[in-house]
Amino acid sequence: MSQALSTDVLIVGGGIAGLWLNARLRQLGYATLLVENASLGGGQSVKSQGIIHGGAKYALHGALTGASEAIADMPRRWREALAGSGELDLSGVRLLSEAHYLWSPGSLAGNLTSFFASKAVRGRVDQVKGEQLPPALQHPKFKGKVYRLAELVLDVPNLISRLAELSGDSLLAGQEIAALHENNELAGLRVDGREIRAQRVVLSAGQGNATLLASLGISQPAQQLRPLHMVLVKGPSLKPLYAHCLGGGPKPRVTVTTHPAADGQWVWYLGGDIAEAAGVARDEAAQIKAAQQELGDLLPWVDLSSARWATLRVDRAEPAQSGLVRPDNAFLADQGKLLVGWPTKLALSPDFSDRVLAALQRDGIQPSAQPSLPELPRPSVARPVWEELLP
Ligand code: FAD
Image (cartoon, rainbow, N blue to C red):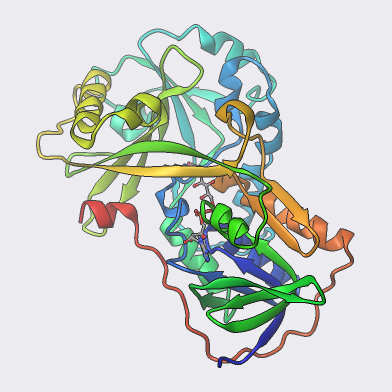
């Protein structure tokens, strides 16, 4: 039988939430172990668009919503981490774009009037023209207005690799997870038969939280899944574009991010309204056709004749909300020694960690001496989805 281990905080799930938390706890001197049953980042995290939202998108409703307030500080915290002067040292992580853009094709959409009046965006949005436009929009035929948002876009696979580095020897590949009870109390977990005692257990397994909770005989907090049907386009003529393209409604008609493929080409990754309900209902061929039509309408000068296309179905996992609305910030629930949560956005991982740290402080859990760990089976880092789908 494998050697029993003990740690301060045992984390289950190595997506952005678990990895960020693990790195923060280690930096504060806590002993940690993080168990991953597949690949690091391979759930939602490497499938995300990597936008570090500051809330501007939500202000499209015309009102300063809870989401806009909670998320407003995230770009600053990420910027500091990327500069090596923040709560984690993420210097060296590839920044894909210093800004995300808001792009209104044709005339200024009516909903932008209230958007610019809202507190969430005042002083944080500048109109750009000419050479300041994103490369893909620099064309004589381009008509429309473009605004620069103070939001970053990150290379998520690269970010996950850096966080794996910051995890040191604390990562453990493990499949079978069961509760370890002592004196009628949760004492830790049994991972592939190995006993791991911990002062606190944190479930940050994304969609996997529901199954883990069920296996521990716990029904709350409930989880909601929001399905998406994303589109990927790869081609030699693509230029970088990071933008929410506005339609008539409060949600972007399409959100484009651009990712570097290993062969030097760019891949456009399309989300936003096109990937939601109507897109989810389409099969792959129909979804690709819809995206081709959308790009043909919006960017007729882009030559897509030799582009390759793929789609990706993925669910966003979040705490259940009434009416499947988006939660406003990171979520954490605790029941005794067990903490369970979802960051709800990649950008909100620092907020998720804050909530765990607050719970540890409240309960007086202090870092203990870090025991040296035996050689453990390590999980691998997930490959970018564009390399999997469009090699
Ligand atoms: P995950 O990344 O899903 O990680 C959970 C991990 O737990 C996985 O590695 C999984 O293998 C592991 N696991 C599961 N079950 C077990 C188990 N039993 N034992 C051990 N390990 C287990 N957010 C933004 O801020 N900006 C964006 O631009 C953005 N774009 C997005 C685009 C898409 C298409 C999607 C789907 C999401 C997007 N998001 C974005 C949201 C963001 O990706 C998620 O909120 C975030 O990645 C969730 O991180 P997580 O660590 O909770 O979950």
